[in-house]
Image (tube, rainbow, N blue to C red; front, side, top):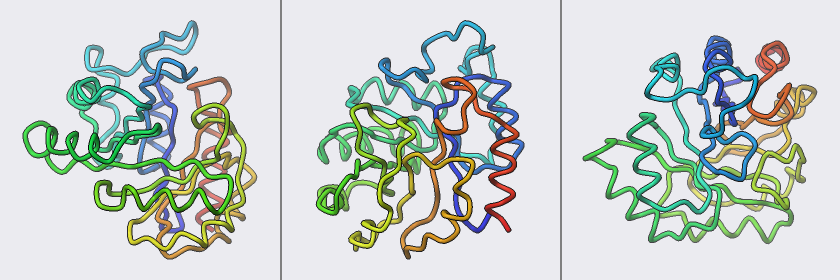
Length: 226
């Protein structure tokens, strides 16, 4: 897939997760935020089974696909609990988390609870000045994720001007996010930054919040790899 990590976020239905994993994506993201329509703790009326430790659906994500938990200004203890219950490989912090909280979170988890766990800090971007926010987190996270600044917290389906990422001169790798859709494979392939290692897909591949269009993803991934 063009050597890019492909993360599909906002997932919560066990069968849908299985189908998406079979496409060969690299990371699956689950959102733990009660204000999101994709919150995994909300039981959808017609979306099937929520992946959780009790029913084993989440075990369908094999070892080749990393499990990402997305949190927004959550208490550290609640994050730790989710990491343990869902066997998360990566934490994505999408709020205004402080570097101190992030350092303490890592110390709590690694190595006692989840050895080697990785942490992503999402940065909302609208103008070139927003890029500089990364400097506050360079010494406490493993990756950045640049997303579109919007009234909600991600999942808006809106894109930002990717060219302003030329201003990112940090050392940590990042994922490109923000409204990437089924018709954007060529645009993604044309985007180049030495630190860009992957893309984040979410709302524009959905049939409803939390349920991904597997056929649309399959076509996109095929176009991305050619």
